Amino acid sequence: MNVNKVVRQHLEMEQFFSGFTPKGKDRASEPQEQEDNMAVAEKTVELEKIAEQVRQCRKCDLGSLRTNAVPGEGNSNARIMFVGEAPGADEDAQGRPFVGRAGQLLNKIIEACGLKRSDVFIGNILKCRPPENRDPRAEEIISCLPFLQRQIEIIDPEIIVALGAHAAKTLLNTTKSIGQLRGQFHEYYAGIGRPPTKLMATYHTAYLLRNYSPENRRRVWEDMKKVLAELGLPVPQ
Ligand code: URA
Image (cartoon, rainbow, N blue to C red; front, side):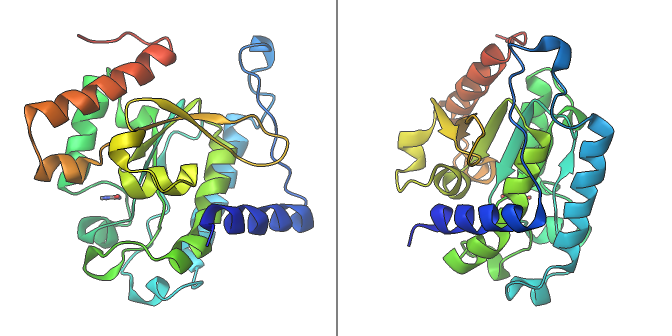
């Protein structure tokens, strides 16, 4: 099954019937009107509406198993959006993304980039914790992905950083391995009428913790340096 296609069709139908029209972006050619998409305050309001829908969601079985849904958090106007796989135990307990060990490592990476956590937005493919942290199932992704797709449309980041195989494969609609995908920019297609968003795939911080070799750390750092360079931000050496 082509999960992304199914979700995309679902979302486009939903947008068609709800009147929600994603706006195009052209930050480079219209600097004076860089917010020709939504004003930041409006983005924040729209993101909170999605967060509330996530908290109410019972579209799949995970909804009845969670302690807290984890809609995602961060800067409504972020230039970088990190996307992980699914909440773990700590995230489920707190209702916030990446707050456990993997999250602490992500915080360090963000800080090493010269950024603050509040500069970026952090979300996940699934908004509820799968039992025993098992892999997300196709039907769970189909139910949940529209939330993330709408968050991406609203935030309209310049770069998405997909953390790990599940995020990268889902957003790029590919079966390639994270080893093949990482280290280069790909294009995330947000739907009809919208230009693609650049996507960098890299290792998930949980993988990095389990395989904390100098080589893997260097790879993630190289990937993040490419992101900073692409955004015209200072690249620490
Ligand atoms: N791992 C994820 O993929 N997401 C989180 O929010 C935490 C850990």
